[in-house]
Amino acid sequence: MRVVLAEDLFLLRDGLIRLLEAYGFEIAAAVDNGPELTRSLLTLKPDVAVVDVRLPPSFTDEGLQAALHARREIPGLPVLVLSQHVEQLYARELLADGSGGIGYLLKDRVFDADQFIDAVRRVAAGGTAMDPQVISQLLARNVRNEPLGALTPREREVLELMAEGRSNTAIAQRLVVTERAVAKHTSNIFAKLNLPPSDDDNRRVLAVLAFLDG
Image (cartoon, rainbow, N blue to C red; front, side):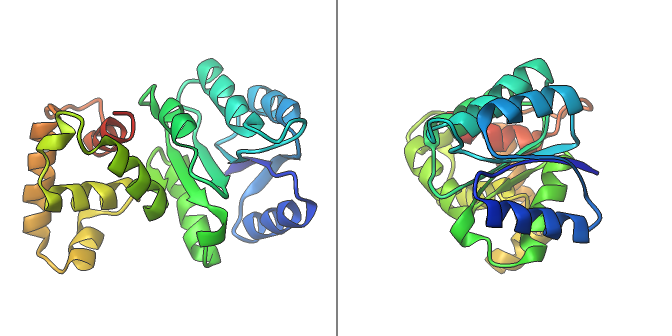
């Protein structure tokens, strides 16, 4: 699996390279600024991009802007964002097209290698990997929006865990309920968000996008 990595801090970038390679990933490119990231994504078309938000030259939003530009040129390009902050505006914009895997992790809340590697693999496979703190902030902003406002507190809990990329089994274990109960909540979420069954669309991802992009 080919990865393009963007991180301006040398030690962190080098550590991420070593970690990813230890788990069998191929580092197609490792860059430290926005323009190089854009070129690498468009030229190499990796299986997944791991992107810091704030990169040179201005240290504002170059990483996300490069990812957004690349996804316009390569629809569905999987992107895992690493940041020290929750950038709500850019998270919503990144999710707006509704295609491809998306992840958003906070650097100081990645506690072990397995957690990080699992997130990279889920995003590369087209799923989501969202830090719970990111989800909480975005959910708090959108909870009043319809039809999201129609969700019960338990349904919002289930949707929040879905956004983290968890399966029904994992959600049931976390909430200490049966898988049947989780399936019922999930079905209710799909109905309230007007997401009918489809062979072409992943309703779990669409449900997550609905509330993050509300």
